[in-house]
Length: 175
Image (cartoon, rainbow, N blue to C red):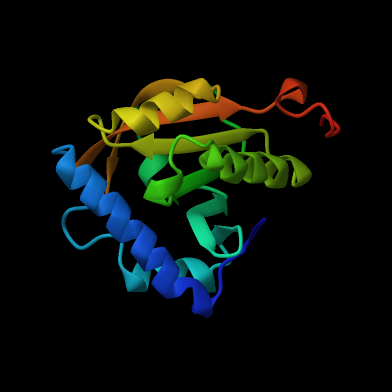
């Protein structure tokens, strides 16, 4: 079950972030190695109603999902596939012990359904150039690499976009 995060989830989310930081460090990827993401980021996401958890008796995954523009996506070296309104996924993490079980797909499907329910037909994501597992996840789920963006004008990230359509979910009406 995917639901909004609340203050009782903060420690569980922090634990998931720490697992991801350790994974990235072991893979020699410098993403999330400078204190980010942290408690303040989670609290801000919760305040903005952009923080979600995947729960199966306990919190096993999390993501920030925002319907609306992201300033870091205004400039891209390359081009987005759409200039329509979009949703953005950030900080998608699954418990290390459950990787390979397609739990991240559940969070992604939730984001797709929520975007479609609001008439939004584009999702955007960015990831570190060395984060090959995230790149494979995105490509397996129909995201196309559109170019390069810079987080806070400094940190280079690969930018991906998925245009949503009827084929993404046969049970949902198309807009």
